[in-house]
Image (tube, rainbow, N blue to C red; front, side, top):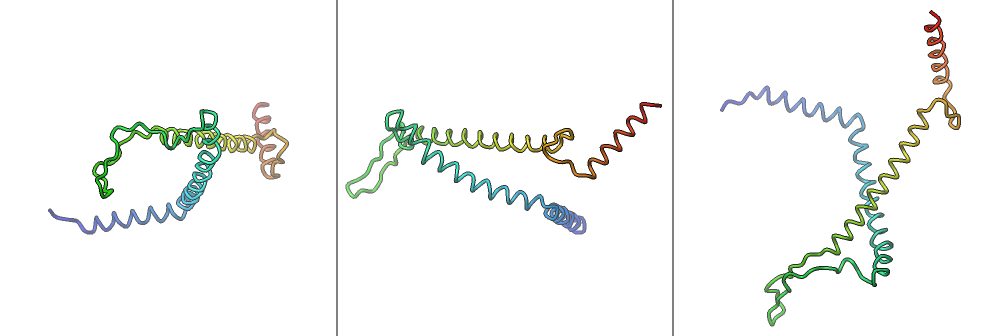
Length: 155
């Protein structure tokens, strides 16, 4: 097998060039910030679910800690010295329920945040909304556009 080292070198350089452009444009920085905020947001939501919602739900369902709910398939076996011979095999449906509640809360919160930003975006794009003053240059451009439309319709 013959390698074309010049072609390989050009391909590698193109990849580095594309990566550099990607990183410089800010996409990578924005993505990193998004990931960091997402991790912090995940900790907040996990605490909200585990420390606030689940104890309340557990109280109303009969003082149950959902983390401990499981269906044991095989009990743990130990010998006289306490060494484990067979591991515990269990379906931890309580932990799954906990994770499911986490997901629903995260999904709903993300939905609300996206709705909020979409509302702000629509408000910013609406020329007739006077609650946010339109910048002077945009206002002048809109007037020029309207004058050109009127002029075009007269002919």
